[in-house]
Length: 434
Image (cartoon, rainbow, N blue to C red; front, side, top):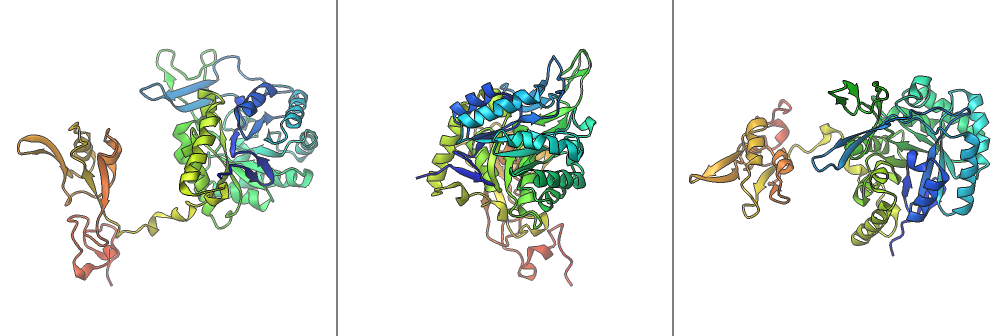
């Protein structure tokens, strides 16, 4: 039997799929609909002090679309909740009472003063919430007020506030990290040193979605003016995976629980985040684009995949890919692959040839016996994967591994005098022989 139940720093949920702190978790109505649809938990949209902030009454979102209008990236300029604190607290308490088996974490953002945190923590604790998430990631609006990413970009501040919270609440403390920083390991280290129970990442990336060339204003615009916002959606997934892997394999933060966020749209995305160490995953953009019922496909897909792989519980594969992530200098330079074309699948479009001829290594010829025919010249192919990436036919272009130690220019064994590829004359990164 496949068991999707999650126990993340003591916060239990029937599955690892949580809704991230965002518009979908702004009120009781949305959260209850999400729980009815099957979500394992939510992070309630970020609460602040009263009086509440004021959001713009106009466009808050901008989108980047693919040719088929599928949303690739999503930009928002919305701030934290603009609903009264007391109203949010009452609704949180009610929802947790009626849905005791679901994870309910509350996102918080107040001024970087110990007194402000001391005031709000007991109010949240009284709701019965399972934990708190410290929003140190929001890159717009609140950061200009000394909160959000303005805190997350300074490891000393991250540690300071996390320590205040650990000293003043019994609830698990999750620190939400900003991607708008040079090295995400530094705030993660600070959070762990301060006693934080976990980190969540990534928050949105500072961005402008585009410029309207008729009005000459950013998208979205309010009365002819625009501002930078937070970028999310499928386009940020590679960035999120990289940052999560850095924390998962850093000796100073290894073992620190991670809640993964960033472009998760289906069960496969979720499994990738979990393979890199995420105990739970948080979703926002996909839910906003397709509705809450996408969680049905996510849970069913993850369960089926786990069954096929022989995994019976989440811990069987969480973090399993971390040992495979390394620094470039440790990659095996004796590993040689060459591109191969399945002529039965090839539709003779020529995209592989053009890409390789114009921008790569001129390793794909385009004619044979006067006919349009594409094949790979092993003496020039470096196995870069560009042709595989641009080929429109799945499975037509592949990479074939050659014998260990083969010369990448010929595919033949390296001269015995140069048995180690690191010292071979054809290797531009060779180490000079003594």
